Image 1 (cartoon, rainbow, N blue to C red):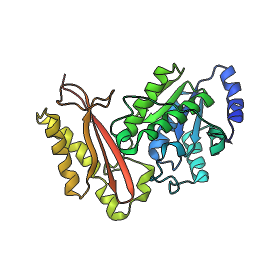
Image 2 (tube, rainbow, N blue to C red; image 1 turned 60 degrees about the horizontal axis):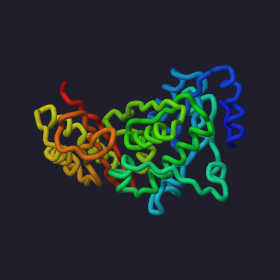
Image 3 (tube, helix red, strand yellow; image 1 turned 30 degrees about the vertical axis):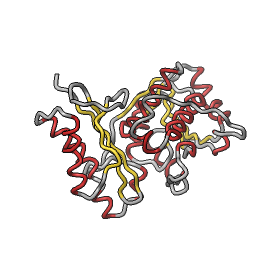
Amino acid sequence: MRTVRSVADLRAALAGPRRDGRTIGLVPTMGALHQGHLSLVRRARADTDVVVVSLFVNPAQFAPTEDLAAYPRDEARDAELAEKAGADLLFAPPVDEVYPPGFATTVRVGGVSEPLEGAQRGASHFDGVATVVTKLLNMAGPDVAYFGQKDAQQAAVVRRVVRDLDLPVRIEVCPTVREPDGLAMSSRNAYLTADERARAVALKHALDAARAAVEQGERDAAAVASAAAAPMRALDVEPEYLALVDPESFLPVDSIDRDVLVAVAARVGKARLIDNATIRRAR
């Protein structure tokens, strides 16, 4: 695996494979790789001829009060893991390569970016996500880009960018990878103490309780949300939001009469965790 740090070097490395008609897969990451990221790399390896993993902690998607400075960084470890999972190229640019002096352009997605994470983290969060992903797609020019279902709203924002801006790339959203007890894998899990780690499964318990309520016949969204909140509070975890939403628009639903996404966010100690699950309408 080769590491490149400039857009010019990335494009030069991909020029030959592209000219030969080989397919290119991109896995955008902020590093601190875990098995969730590596599952995306392995999927890209299975689907495409050349696999690019980007490694860039994007300052534009962090609010001033968030954990940019503390966000875990270990490029050597990430490079080793990415290579073992099947990456051909690691694109690890410095900040001024992505945002050069005088950078003044923002990609903003209305609608789907506004509720849930957008409301909690501010409009600048998804502006930063949409902008950096647009840049990465333009820098690498992949045939396919891979994202995880854990960040379902982010994936929806990216799909909207690709659709609205006619970007020639297919977006694949792959299943959330979980620890044996159900906790969704996340780089921020590293912040959890042993006690907090035991309580963090509250988010998965909430999703399980929501699904169980629907399986038992409950169709009122508010009642399902109430059932989901109970196991969180039993573990002394207060949700920032626990919402049943349309999986495309992320607008709230009143009843379970279609496929619904249950989305949850909560702080456990220093870590802010998110998770989600789709409840399929019986057909």
